[in-house]
Every structure is written in structure tokens, then in C-alpha cells.
Image 1 (cartoon, helix red, strand yellow):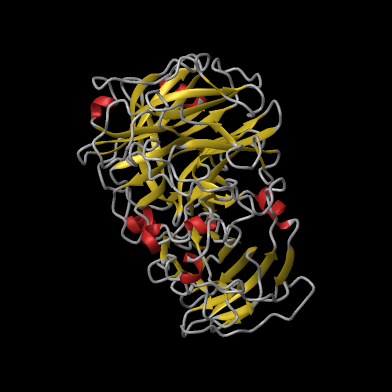
Image 2: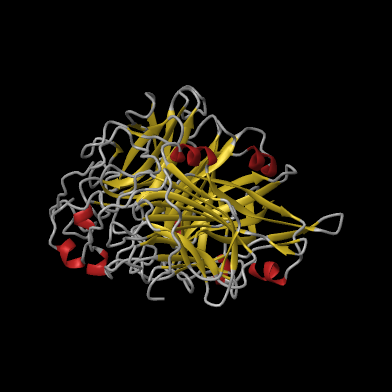
Length: 635
């Protein structure tokens, strides 16, 4: 499709007004200095470091003693690549607006940093989680972080593992997350090469996910409450990934016991077809393990993992962010075994390293993903110094048991293993799967400052149509689409001349969501590969359910939710500032109905205490600081 037809909406007071259409080329960008494009594609409505490199979300926690949320992240301030991994952090009262701990300039938001080569955490503060308790499990205003301390580099699942590389450590704050102290007895988990899990010939041992679990206490038959921690790991050569499970008495979170592997999948396998459930690969990282309850109060057990090295057919990344539901049983030795029954991708696109926490204030489970950049030019470094940062986090997502009643039985559902069909007494079926949606209260907060347009009249489209030529670089689109005879979806980030646009398509022939980026940017140094995810609309009482596409555009991020059971994060970097138009996509020769289309322009800036340009000086580490650039690249 060379250009897009247009049927523009009638102007109204809520519609954005056309602006100039400045355009960039790759040559323009390469000629620019550090931080000159800091605000060009930068998200404003997402959680993001003040500047520099960021990756995994960490330490998300609600503090009931102060009525505050805290969220941390892997950070390399003043650099645009991974290295010397530390933690930055911020605080919020509502999960909408955030304030940096310590300030936004340079490295002021740091809360944990490596102690220097030769110490237990000298080369990295890797990922971890947090709880609002002290080491005795008491809620007294203390915040407790459980993280992986790293003393040797490089480390990678595909490299020979250096014994002692990763241990597990604690840090505590008694002033609401402003300052932190390492536990004097760190590390609290360290094993010799003769002890499990180190005697497994491991791929890694990191990223503790720490939570209390009365359900596991009951399953194991223990009298006293315990906390549990799962980790990411695996066994070489090509045995398979693992989720080690540890426990500690709730009254002593420094006393940890290894219970064995919670889950032991074979290498490069999956619970169903790779297209619909992904691949387990050879190594797990950033694992999580928790129960969610359905409408009848029945517990459903879920594991989330990042998988590495496996089958990435149909997948644009070398890693998968996965969820699996499974049955949980007690082993003879008093440990716990997880057996998967269904699964899928927690994020079908650039989202990775997902973690979640129990939001006790609202009795819900909230998840964040690291949304990676997506550059292919200059060895993946194109525009990094000009933008002055890499990475952001997804919108906060609520995880829940998604249920649809009176679903017609389907061979596709049984084959795909992405949902489970449960027969009911009346002969009908209920489909359930992992539900995911952006937090409704956060979405309402982002809309608060936005202008809104609504198209409520049901319209039949027989061709791709731009409904509004001028949108916003920070906006939300929500559409309900039904009665499609073929491929259907949305067009986003379209330029007025039709040169740039991105299609979000439901393709019924193989039940996939396609994010077509071949025309997303005239700058080919940005990745223009199509992103593929699996989505199967149910048939309910003989009628195919409507497709609800909810899209959040924020700088280079396009975050897509479908029917509250599909999430995909994509990166799009239009060369033209005016590439903000949107509309309805319909495959050639087909038709579809849109019963509702809404758009919010100018979603809120969630960092009110920062300037829009919070860039910092970029520096390059010396050979001495990086062990001759073997620990990290230095820039």
C-alpha cells in the first residue's frame, strides 16, 4: 500500500491543530551531538529514568505506613548502554504521577550501587523485588529489598558460569525509600559448587521474586508463615531452564532454605505451539510465581518468566516474556511442583523482564515490563547518544483471571493452549486465561488533561481510512471492531502525505495480531520488522466477539491491549513530527464495522517535578573502570 486514503473527521474544539512537519534523516541524526534529540521520541506518560540507560523494573512495593508506592529500575546514569548496573527509584501516591528519590539530575535518583570489584556486590546490583517489612517480617515502616548481588562479569546463560558470580542480598530503608543500607550479613543466599542449585551446572541464578504465600504454607503443611522466593536459572548443557524455589520463616528473612526446582521444563519446549505460547528456551530470568482468584474464588497459579535461547519463530526478539498457568502440588519432600496447562506471551513485542507486585491497597496484582528500544542501524546504537537515554517501563498492568462464559467449544482453543475451556453444569463452556489491562485508575489519570474526540455512530468500512489527520505524539485510541470479513484493525502514526504509517491488524487466517512497521519511519536505521502476536476471538453463543483495540502512543512507544487478554509493546520512530494521524485498517476486498472510536490527545506528563528535558552529561568509562571493556562497553 503506497499511500492511505483519507476521510477526515469534521473539525471540532477537541481536535489538535496542524503544526509544522519537521522531518529528520539518518544523516541529520548522525551529525547531531549528545542529547540533541532527547525530547524527540521520548515518552512522557510512562515511567522512565531521568536520563541514561535503564532496563528491568525492580522493587515495586506499596508502603501501607506512609500510603506511598515505590518503583525502582536497573540504571546506568550518564551512559546510554548497560553497565555498572545500579538501582534508581521514584515514589508515587497514586501510580500515576512520580517523583524521583533524591532528584532528577545526573545520578541523584540512585539508591543502590555496586561497592567495587572484589566485594559481594562489586560489579552489579541486579534485579529483585521488595516488601514493606523488616527482616523479622514486621510492618514497622521499613522497606526491604531482596536483590541479586554480582561479583563477577561477564555473565550470560550461553557462557561458562563462573562460580560465585551471583549471590542474593538484602537492603533496607527506614525513611520511606530516601536512603538505603545493606544488610550487614549479606549475602543471605550463597552456595558452593557442591550444593544445589550451584551443582546443577547452572546457566545463572538471579532475580529473586519475594512474597509471602499462605496458600503455599497450607500446601506444604507448615505451621508457621513463610516467605517464598523464586529465581531464574537453568541447567547446561541443553537440559532446560529452571525456577529454583526457596523459603524463609516470616520472622527471619535472612534464613533461607532451598526447596528444589518449582518447575523443570525440558530445553526449548513449550506448553503448546510456539505461535500461541512461545518457547521456554534454555534459561529463565526474572521469574515470578503467584496465585490469582477467579469469580468463584478458585485459585489459579501462574508463573511468569523471561526465556532465552529458544525457538523465536514468529517472534521479533531473541527472548520471550512468558506466562504459564499450571497445577501446583506438594512433592514428597515437602517442596512444591508446578505443572503447566496453558500459556502465552506476557508481552508479544518489545516488553521484557516483567515483574509484578501485590498492590495491597487495592487488592490487585500490578505488573510492569521493560520496554526496550528497537534500533538496527550502527550495530543497534543508531541515535542513542543523540537521544541520551534508552528504555522505559510499560504502563502499570493489572493481572487477573480473564473469564468469558458461554464460549463455543473450539478445536483452535484446545490446540493453541492459550486459554482453557471449562465445561459447566448447564452444558456451556467458560474460557479462562491470563487477563491483562492497563490500570483503570491510571488510564483515567492520563486522560485527565487530554482533549477527547468521539465517533459513536456505527460505521461500515470497506477500505483503510484515516479518520483524523492530526493526532498527538502522546495519545490514546480505543476502538470496537466487529463483523469483519477479513483482516482489520487500526492505522496509527500516519503522516498527511501517506509516506509514514503503522498498521495494527488482526489477521483471521492464522489468529494473529500484526504490527506492520514497514512504513513506520523513513529512517531505515529504526527497526521496521513486523511484530507478530497470537490472539483468538472467542465465539460466544454462536457470535464472534468484537475486537477491542486500546492503543497508547507515547513518544516512540505504542502499547497495545486487546480484549483485556493481549498486550504488545512496540517502538515506532517516525521521521516526521506530523506523523500523528490515525484511522481504521481494512484488508483489500473486505469490510468491517466500527461501533465506537475514541481518542484522547495530549495524555498527561507523569513527571511533574522534572523538566521535559532532563538529560544529563554522557561520559565514557576508562579501561580500568571496565576491566579493559570486558565487564561493560563503557559508553
